[in-house]
Image 1 (tube, rainbow, N blue to C red):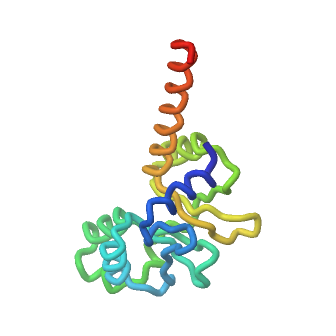
Image 2 (cartoon, one colour):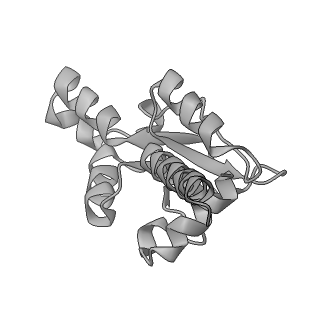
Image 3 (cartoon, one colour):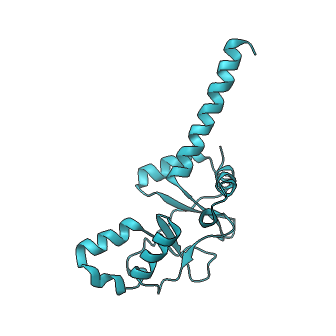
Amino acid sequence: MLVKQLLSMKSDNAKPWIDSATIVTIAPTTTLGEAATLLAEKRIGAVVVSTDGRRPEGILSERDIVRQLGKHGPEVLSQPVSGVMTTQVQTCTTGEDALTILERMTQGRFRHMPVVDGQGDMLGVISIGDAVSGRLKELAAEKEALTGMIMGS
């Protein structure tokens, strides 16, 4: 299964916060408190940080916010996300294999990855859950095919 298939499965779910055409982004100057509110409202685990809304400059997850709260207390919520976000964002393209992406996410211990085109513009965001779901569908299809071959249908 390819990343483009994962993106199309997401938009089939009719969930506006994960529609590949509507990528949720925030500016680097957004406060951690505002970012936490957005994550809660959209019911998402991470948000892409981008000045222009097209190219990822960073990514901020719920875990990033919780770690900062644990270290510095609630006053950290007034700080900009630019000081906390992951700046070395791992990205992928639509033609990459979903299993390879799943392995990258597992090895890198991150759960969200922007999907970009050849110019670096975002096309969507996939999560490790999307990759696992895609892999499970792939395995189910393989099982069906093998069962059909064994049963002679």
